Image: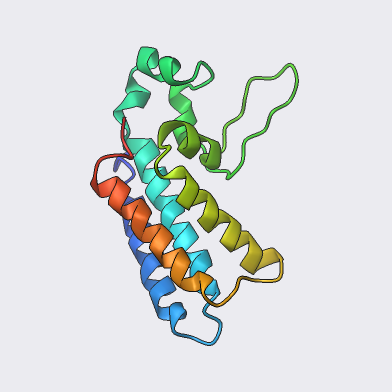
Length: 147
């Protein structure tokens, strides 16, 4: 990506702003969806800009199935089929590369799924989802979304 993934930071900020606006609305659970997609774009930026993807030896030391092209993954979950190379998803890459971020990222993803496809989330979870995003942003600021 020519801009080093910088547009993902803009998208992350936009989704967070929309989430904050929704947090006070009648359908505030949709804020969790925005917060998840903010986290998704933070993860995409981290993957695109992480220097570990430029060093195959370091990358393979983390996980033998990682390849430089793994940073370009856009799907949420990977695919594992017998006899085929491992196909990564963002969720798995976050778990392997950024373990301090992974629990919050997964909680946001599950909250997003609950809002979009299931029974929704309890009212208090809107506050939780913003706190999870804040935690991810803090990990990024501390340099823990880069190897």
